[in-house]
Image (tube, rainbow, N blue to C red):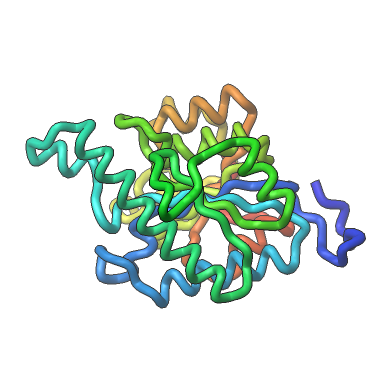
Length: 250
């Protein structure tokens, strides 16, 4: 955890030295609900560049693909579930390339690694290489989920965070909710925001956060999760500064 004093490089110590930020595909779509909204991607990229400039932190990102294709929707329409999930992995790669391009236009060195090999456009996922990129100050974007069907990109975020020996997973939401509530705040006006909740409570009470596989993986490895509103400018900065934002799952 940061001490509050500048590092030798002039940057401020962050709450965690290394984090994995989960960005859902739907966040890229903006109000349209599908496709890629360049303005929204620019907003997310600007926030990432801002925190990388201010804080001494290694930042990796896992992107979803729901703005282009959702495997569960394909399976629900009668498509083979594994085939539908592989299509979703390709969708995450499109988002990763869009975010990479925007980050690099802002001057932030970035690498994309995919769990599904596509050598012409991105590096294959290699853990040691990813760690080296982070150590050199590059943002690493992980695409392709885990590379396996039947696993969500939430699980991919938890897995990569454990592999990268990150301090936390920052799970950004895009639907206007700013954390985990006692019930769905869009349906129940009496629902209250939880500042902190345990992994077991999330699983046992069915609280909407990440899927059960991701939560269990984080619990088994003592990996904190911060669920917060990604679309509110400054939230990532506030979290890294140690301010109470969203809900902490630990």
